[in-house]
Amino acid sequence: MQIKTHQTPGFADQKPGTSGLRKKTRVFMEPLYLETFVQAIFDATGGAAGQTYVVGGDGRYFNDRAVQVILRMAAANGAKRVIVGQNGILSTPAASHLIRKRGTDGGIILSASHNPGGIDEDFGIKFNMPNGGPAPESVTEKIFAAAKSPGEFKIMETQDVDLAAIGETHLGDTVVEIVDPVTDYAALMETLFDFPAIRSMIEGGFRLRFDAMHAVTGPYATEILENRLGARAGTVVNGTPLPDFGGGHPDPNPTWARTLMNEMMGEGPKQFGAASDGDGDRNMILGRGVYVSPSDSLAVICEHATVAPGYARGLKGVARSMPTSAAADRVAEALGIGSYETPTGWKFFGNLLDGGRATICGEESFGTGSDHVREKDGLWAVLMWLNILAATGKSVKELLADHWARFGRTYYSRHDFEAVDKARAEAMVDDLRARLSSLPGTGTQGLTVSEADDFAYTDPVDGSTSAKQGIRVLFADGSRFVIRLSGTGTEGATIRLYLERYEPDPAKQGMDVQEALAPVIAAAEDLAGIAKATGRTEPDVIT
Ligand code: VG1
Ligand code: CO
Image (cartoon, rainbow, N blue to C red):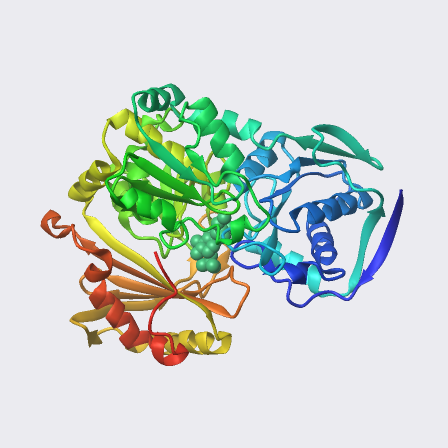
């Protein structure tokens, strides 16, 4: 087994976005591309010599090849041990847990998450820190600096490792340990939630469906929901992970999980429906005839979390990304706990979780989680909901109605304009930014702007700052819209328009969401001019 050193010219486009580096799969397959980024991870974090890592991914096309490359490079760079999910598979939350449980020096996760997979679709890679969470900006900047400059990388020339064989093997002096991807994660879930209560609810006739969308959560959900909680066989659908996710977007929202959505919106036999994304960190929650918006889900979870054994001692605080609705803030206020507003992306929750300031975190993009790991966690959210349903004996619909009656309802929606011309999208945002100071006092669609700014964040733990995190326009009646450009796309730009309106009056809480938001939607168009700038009059995806 020989260690070879190769030259790389560096790549100027290897700047990690909201969650790691995402590119078209064919870009990752180009000579030197993956290797350059992996070496940059090692070099930017003090070198791999003597280090221990977790490696795994969501099973998308090229996952297995990338794992082999990373193993050979880790060995060539002197890593002590690499813990790999069997067949190269680990959900993002399971990887986060393994990093923490085994006390490793970090982990490399292969996923483009909710983006489609396949040779003509997307691939991604990210580095997680010893706390199990995504590398903060200070680290991703160092990785990018290393990746863009010419340099060299080391790789061992050897046979592929058999990723199917559980147990230890060696690459030179490096131990490669293949583990079952589900076992440790399932055990962790059993410590957090009241499995006997959920089990007896299911045995009592409670029906549910979980759509794994041909992505990584299939084996996890089958083990936990069917094997351990007694849900009937077939509860988990699309449960076999496929390299192209069956040709769909593994994105659990009403658009991409339409079959499940249609089934749950009728008066069918199922009381509960849920779905998860490519790498298992997102969730969508549905009840019979009701869709729970992720912002509401976060708020309801905070309201009831103490019914779950892992949270019985109370919550330290709650954190949400800025575009997420303020519903969780109102619960935090009622509970007398802290609430935090961070930029988009789970990496910003890390310090709050590590510092004991927040117990539960959430994003409007179908991400919810807690301090049990340092990633959002799709199945965790599903189990939390099941635990709440079992403990309260209420339906999803009743829980939502009760929540709105107590705290008011926040009508919320996100409109995505995908693959638009990047220069035009940036110009539109720049133009709006330039007009921010003149907006207060402006009236349109019966609404008056009260404040307008570009969200900037100072981390309360380490003082690091992040500017230009999304433009917010607030109206006098408490409604608002937010505009930002996605940092996970791989084609052109994606404009995200987040819309919100608060309704305290129970008599007005039953409206259609898009209708309730119509004035805010029209005001956003008047002030930002998305249609004029991009030629798009309708969003591609509404959630
Ligand atoms: C999106 C979401 C963000 C989420 C990120 C990663 O980012 O808006 O809330 O943290 O995806 O989720 P952006 O920059 O495209 O808006 V995942 O499940 O794709 O890792
Ligand atoms: Co994801």
